[in-house]
Length: 367
Image (cartoon, rainbow, N blue to C red):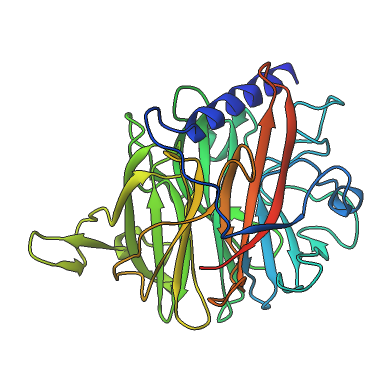
């Protein structure tokens, strides 16, 4: 476990560096847009007592084929944080907890089951993970991190977009590729051979995905790995053609106008963390991400995926939640006051690299 502990300390340094505020930039005033509602994971909560989900991150919510909500967690442990104590710990990723409780209820999100578990018991990871070893196709990977999930009632199939992490080192951690995994029983996910490869310069803009269906189309927003400067890209693909890369259409600018079926042009530019996009019930599209230049989780809105997005609205600052990241939009959010529900990760460490917090909380704000 010494290798794993060193790796996660390296990851901690990479996350801290990627989330640091750029020098010379004015810090924003503390936001009042979103407020903490509850912590949803931790060693002292039912998530650990029932499913051995203690220290974890992300918690990406998406609608399952049966209409309830699945929450995808990244590197997960039965200890408060990655390096223990105690050691050895139980390292898994990705893991899914599920809930049919509306996030706007007085008690907030309450999980009622875990994928691949009948009742209570250890929640295993959903798919093969190399864990500092061989992933699928014999390729080395450090871990597998979920990007987003989507489901299709027509076939009862679920898809997870994920990234295979090559290393956490350097100023910007890098993926080897982005991939898709599917499940036809809601529990066991199979990693497909599909790969959207990163490049040698770690600048491929199709590594961290978020997906939202609207009619026959699934809209895919993506950015570079490592929370680095770069463009945000937009593609679309018919819901039944996600496994066919040639069917993905880019949204691009030809010098005169925007249109589909073109090479992608960046719709936004910045230093993006993991993006999250959801279409709300009234048709409003909401985007959330960590602005790594300011250290704030921000949102934008638009009337459609290929329409003009508003300026950033600060939802959370690092004063409210130190060492924050994520900010994933709950699909049951609304556009009214205090109807935006965000899953926000926190990973704080001492100067020596010892973790002091590693968990996910629910925040409530307004788009």
